[in-house]
Image (cartoon, rainbow, N blue to C red):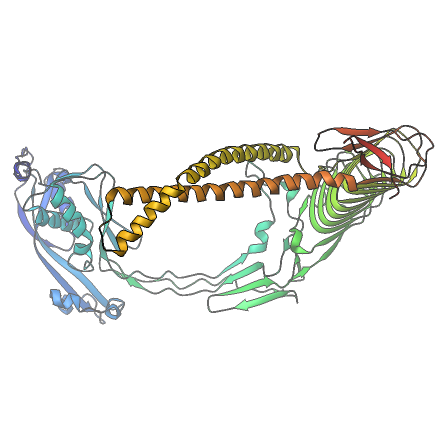
Length: 637
């Protein structure tokens, strides 16, 4: 404790610029300190004060608010008995008069290395004691008294009342004081904050507000957070129960009183945004005490016509282009349908670079370069440019030169385009690439690459140089197949290792079964006759039990690995077996040069066949003979 005593001892400070001490009564200590510094031409930081007395006064303001005789002094008990209702009475006033002795600092303060400050929220209804990081304090027998006196002085410098609104202060600081007492020398690693006063916080007034939630979707931003005018929200889609518009009702706040004793008056609410619009049958109005909400009853897009908001499902536009609409992005489940009416074969109904996302779209004309259309259902009556992409679950295209992705796809004329789907029907293929589970081509021309996992069917064959492929892994990625093969090898290796370990354990168990049973019988005999079990026997029996549990665990793990391998290899075999069910069917004669390929998984080889010119080999499938040799044969079905 020698260190604590030395630190607590007063140390002399240079007093060349000191002032004579004087006592003054004031309601603003900080102001008096500034005045004293100015009068004596010294720094305010060289002055300190000692609190001698605090007088708390109150009154109810009458018609003569400046009458000083109306003030009544309050005791500590009187202060404790002031109700919230009285605090919130605008005619109730509080003030404090402080008797202080102001003097020059001539000695170091015992807590000079404890950097304290007072902070408050914006209303000064909560006052916090802030202790700066790296502050250091040494505990001594006078610490607690010195500390609370320092807090009082900090409050007075901030013009915060003392002895009022601070019932929580000592309990909030108790843990800190206890830590300092235990540590004796305490260092603050980070800034710490403690609530030391709390009065009655006012509730802010709420002005009325009209929030157009649907409008927030209107302007898209690019990667640099700039407005992308190509995606300027021509259509604003919504789904059922979406919040479209919200009106916040005006609410007058409640007054309060801060820790300086000042009454806080709340302003009257501003009312300037009351709804003046009407709503259609597809919008629901929901009102409570605080707000009015306007929600979508159904999916669609928002319209505002003649002062009325509503939701519609279908829209007709002449074209979708940068100039007229910009790109259109609606929620796929919003049930919006767009009809694009431009039919001129020399113009684009969907302009260059436009992106359209919609539930359903009917395009009477062409889809231009670099355009992207995404829908649940799409119809293109014109042609799709070679750099355009159409993605739709149900898709119909007149002339296709670009990329198409979907489930059920119908192409009237395929001209060097690419198609990926589940079931693809092409009326006329004059060059193109098709990948699907099942492909049906009415008229097959030349230079087409058709790949299916189940069936390729041709009604009429006119051209040649076509490649028709059956690939059971068409819908599986090569990465997935490689990962699965690696997993099978890893599981198989694990099975071999566990099997080897299991064999050793089982042999050991067989070799020691008789000894185990003998010890078990002896232990039962000892127990039945009340004889203390020898430690060596008990340990040996426990070893047997541990060994048996390990053996059971190995057996369980071995069976789990076998089941896992059976599952993986079974899926592998199922994919392989699908190729034997796949067919390539040509209802016409084979003409010119055409190549048939069946891709095997295991072994990973291609079985190739070239139908003879003018042959009637209608149904082709994969065959394996008794020697395991694979070939493509003409089948009956």
